[in-house]
Amino acid sequence: MTSTSDPSGKLRVVLLFGGRSSEHVVSCATAAGVMRAIDPQRYEIVPIGIAPDGKWVLLDNDPTPLELTRDHTPQVPEDAATVLVPTSTRDRGLSVHDAGEVPRELGEVDVVFPLLHGPYGEDGTVQGLLELADIRYVGSGVLASAAGMDKHFMKVVFAGAGLPVGPHTVITDAQWRHDPALARDAVAGLGMPVFVKPCRAGSSMGISKVTSMDQLDAAVEEARRHDLKVIVEAGMDGREIECAVLQGHDGAPPRTSEVGEIVVREGHGHDFYDFDAKYLDADAVELSCPADVPPEVSDRIRELAVRAFMALGCEGLARVDCFYTRAGDVIVNEINTMPGFTPSSMYPRMWQASGVSYPELIDELIALAMERPVGLR
Image (cartoon, rainbow, N blue to C red; front, side):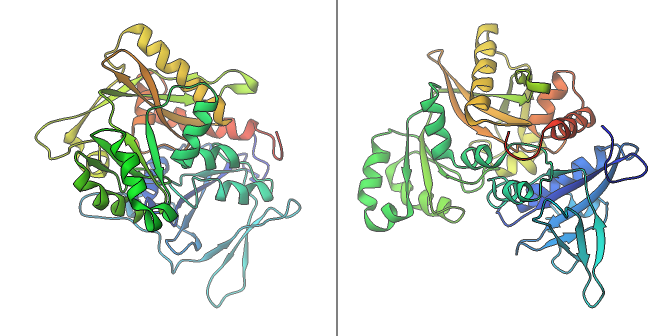
């Protein structure tokens, strides 16, 4: 890879993070992890944060303010210098506007690494903006990002591709406001327990485990704080096993990691793998990778992960979550086109267990983005 914009030969890489979604803080934490690990001898880093109000700002290449701890919740500041993004294929340079000063050119970049989670970033919106200017970026394109963000349409695509999906029902905003009894009946038909989730959110935001119908309304309202469209999934009697996927080079088939399993330890107050268990309580979870499953089950999960990746037309990376039931079946639960990417997140840890270190994984994803042509493909 040779830079087209830096005389030193380094690739100029925009790390794009923050955003308008409820996963803003997780995105900041992801950016901190990548900043610490990325090779400064190979890349010139341009850190651009998206504030909660949607403003794009230029920040310092310092991961410390972006780290998520129990005592510190990171947030992109709104008072930093504004970054303007081009929408023309003829002028792809970024510019910076400091209050009261003449705009200055930031210049072109080689690739954008969008470390954004949730709506307004992971859902095809930012990808579409970058496509307008023919700017290369890490990860899936507009359609795969949008379908992968929406758990409803994700399952529609998977079912259409012949992948096994679990029982579920969707509660739209109109249905909940005008005919909630019908929604409750559909949920009752799934049996208990169920998991109530925002359709277009991640990082376990707004998710509730419901064990009786009298808990349903509160769970739906909690999910609706993050997304007015809600999905309710039947609880599966079994284990959740995950698999990391990487796009192949030059049209080769996607590659898969060893499969992994998160075990939530008892005694930490987590009924399932919730936000605190993921990001704030490291002692609450244990990663088993390779997961303790029969070889044929591991092979089946990896096969389904590749099929899910290809069914959505994903690019770059994805994490596929499956259920391995007590009956011996494997069910595809969901795909995440920009999975958590802190050093302690499942996606990089599964690749580390498969022989690919965190810095090597960053290099690989940037290389894949640089290989990809701009425009329709």
